[in-house]
Image (cartoon, rainbow, N blue to C red):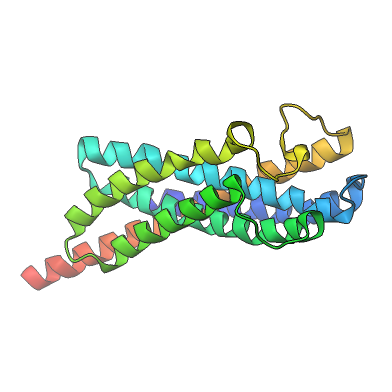
Length: 228
């Protein structure tokens, strides 16, 4: 299993690398400049795909956490914890790229907008998740607590996504894809970037899980040699 995941991580990583080399050209050169926000809107092609990648990773945490609570199998805890690390990475990217877009558009790096605040809450939840994993003395109890925390944490994701509908927020109308369409060139660049980021999620997750499985196998071998 670990070797297959490692192989898949290399294949997906190669595809992600090609995509990441192409995405900046599509976003900065191929896609036209948005009339109202100008060049500042270009961060859209990395900010929003980062958010989708974050949602995908935390959804996997949600699924694997439920599987762990139901079946109590170590492998589901490994998948959930690795997906949490990947989701936290992209959540951090969301929080870093957001202010770059916000400063020229809103005139401030940060405002306590509903979507921003809920994203920060999500980031804090999964920082606590990682801390619980690294500093708990009881692995099984930690895994159960983290599974519950991962499920609860994911429930914040729909609130983030639909916060522009539920509350009055300062986020630009352009992110509301349901109401405002994009020109063909901008739409193509956006869809391409989203696909690349999702492939990147899969590549990082596959590599991370393969490494964790290898570590577990090494620990098992060490324990066996201690017994003999």
